[in-house]
Length: 596
Ligand code: O2Y
Ligand code: MN
Image (tube, rainbow, N blue to C red; front, side):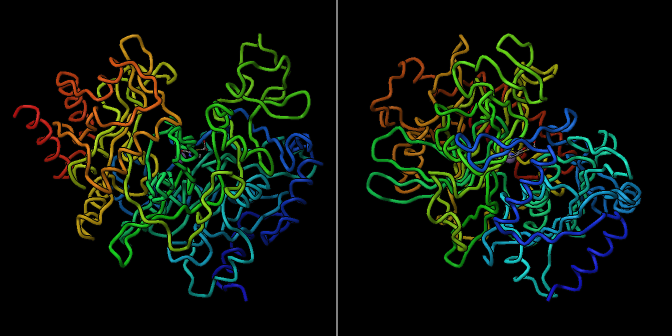
């Protein structure tokens, strides 16, 4: 029996949005295949060459709908102060009134898909249920890959089951005789991505793309879940989860939060360069973490697939990702080769002589524009990843030994720093970020864009309460059971702008040091910024790294840190009069350590 609450809500949405028909998503392969086939027949998708990419299709979006729209993303909590200074806020009454007008008749001429989904393995005590009502077949197909969908989820729902109500419309109703564009969506000022944390509800209108529309991902698993996590004493974080197996067969798990463009998916799928080490992927983007009865912190990956950036992904940079997307993958905004395969910038050393670009135009290497959109994506089932851990869906989660925070910092920050304790680790998480480069349109090139915990766009409530929640979590268990916290920086450069650290598979050397610390507290040197590796003990066997580069990677330059401290002081102004006391104290202690 379907839940009355669910049926009533669907009926309400039918009356409001007026779809031509409603289709329940059961979550089967046959349904998925039929949906894609229909989209191919209607020329909304291109089937790729089955000999080269079996089960794969390509979608091209409207050029105006290619990424998350942070300026149109809102936290509609009752009180403005609960959304805090880092979120756009509109009161729930005003937002609902505005969006209801847009939703009125918005699905005319379209099909409403009802997608019950579970974030997290079915039935795990970590998992949460949502139902997305969407008028987009593209979203439906993507949700099928990215989450556990359909009847198996409905079977878990009783009248009392709390679920997140996710309503999505592309915002392009069709009247009789209208031609449906290739990628229907609404203009930017009519796009709304709204979280109502107190109502357990998400309303998204006007965009069909990625994080704006696949509502299980950023909207639910981070924004709504972070609010739930604060109230229920757990953590919903923008983190990969990596399983490491030492040459001796010891298994450890680490999580890592990195701002975009820092190689999170690459690290999640690392191919370790050190002999005997093995790495397996548990998750590449989101982790839900909670303490269990043994006092340790456990994590699950709430997702079932990868929605990864294709640009830059290659057999050199991430062979596991390339193997994952060899079949059963949805590609969005990549280029099409003449033999019906996909291509994007840096996928191969040499571009093909001819392509159809992401907007459907002829392209040659002499073209002025990029062949693929820089934010082009693949959506692929996690189970297709050769490095996926056999236990990645363990409903009990995996125990976490270390938490990594990182950023893209050409100067100042050493290769790795261990925090003195949990609160110092929270401070390190709060100051992470990346240096602004010429790739970003900004007047602040060279300055650091701080992105606390890589969560700035994803915290569903006040950032000060978020920091305080982390600090409170550190009090929930004995200190020795807490994961240790590390700050890593693969991106330090020399004065000529060359990277000092080879990165990729070589990052296992840093992970090896981290695990030597979590297991045995070995080989550390105390500095004012935290504990660094003893360079003499750090494993560089087989890694040809210049001795000068090596020294710089582990150096703490006090004048650079003075500048860093000034920059952190400036950044802490975002908290206004609600700067958490502990962050103030940690910054003061950092200053003092340099002067003692
Ligand atoms: O541009 C989008 O809509 C996708 S955003 C995204 C997708 C996968 C993983 N992470 C992100 C992100 O913005 O952090
Ligand atoms: Mn992400």
